[in-house]
Length: 228
Length: 228
DNA sequence: GTATAATAAATAAAGAATTCCCGATTAAGT
DNA sequence: ACTTAATCGGGAATTCTTTATTTATTATAC
Image (cartoon, rainbow over all chains, first blue to last red; front, side, top):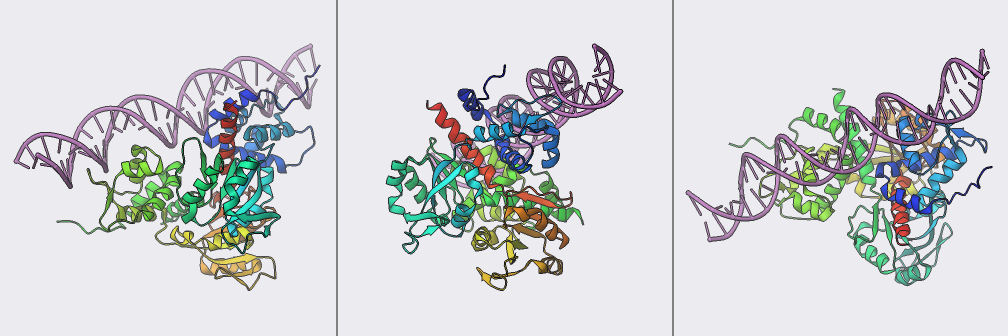
């Protein structure tokens, strides 16, 4: 009576939804995922928007709208099947099949990112690191080999790498961006504060630690003032 | 004829605006700042919204609205005085007087953050690091001393520290949050993926690297699909 | 001086995102 | 079986953010 639970149903529809998903929703999805992965429940457990919202300090309607973008359907009175929900979010973000990526800059930040186990669960698989410091070339950081920058473009092309992560000092940002693009890389995750320019066909996402801190600063500032 | 240019004019008004500033605006302000700091122009140079917008790939009206929240006023046909604009943004964010902060977790990510010179220019001055690894205690990382976690609450109180930065492994997130709060800390910048719960009077900002990557992933995914 | 063009500032309009509301559904208790 | 309460899903309403438009100002060129 039941049709096979094919998690790949509606590839086209998913990509169309992906195009339309609001950025705020995209930014919340990983939070749901993090929460759901950690609540360790029975294989057939369900969870409601009310519960999720309560845990994440959101309103249930927003959670429902967000989850709806992934295509999951819930059951009245029960909620969403936890396991299927995790899968739906992963699939929507493309995190079910981690993408291979190159990282440039094997300093402290690069090391931190290479060492963060979580990324592999979040769709990012860094397969090689690059640096211009000859003393680092040939070494391994967290099991990932550090190579000469010169080898990057050709290797990226040969391995069909789509994603580049930039963790070098900011003054090289534009130069490395261009190098990555020359290797056929399509998306760049920029951890430097530098602003870089790319063509429209390249996806550029700035990690923007300063933006995050600005929100904190502003709140702290206004709160402090209001206590006067 | 001219009244003194007092950059501290209207403290109250600024704090009120700070309360009202939209988060998207707050997140863009550091980008303007980054750009303005790097254009190195004459002391009396002016810059227009059109120029800023062009460089940052935004529309002029939005830039103008954003800058207006800081209280800066521009001149028709000239734009905003660059130096005063930098000051206005810094002041609005509270970055003109860097806040002392404690950092917990002296691993790779903690080291990266301690080593990032930029933060001192962005209102954050990390004065001490804390760890539970006894082999690290007593050492210095980037000139900052690593101390035992036990000392944190009392020291935080004595030094009147307002900000805590969490870069330890995620499993300690809640525990360290509580420890920071017990030391009187008012704002927490959480780099772990863990979600932590705090009272309403505590400011919690999650750095959320995964959220940033989710935006990239989704764009990459939809773009790839649409090429079929 | 006058005209022109560029710009800020204020206001209006449009567009997005969030929240509210209501009907439909379903599990669980009586 | 019936009732009740919880929840989802869709659509409307609201709120927030962005973008467009208009007006006023001012530097610059003539």
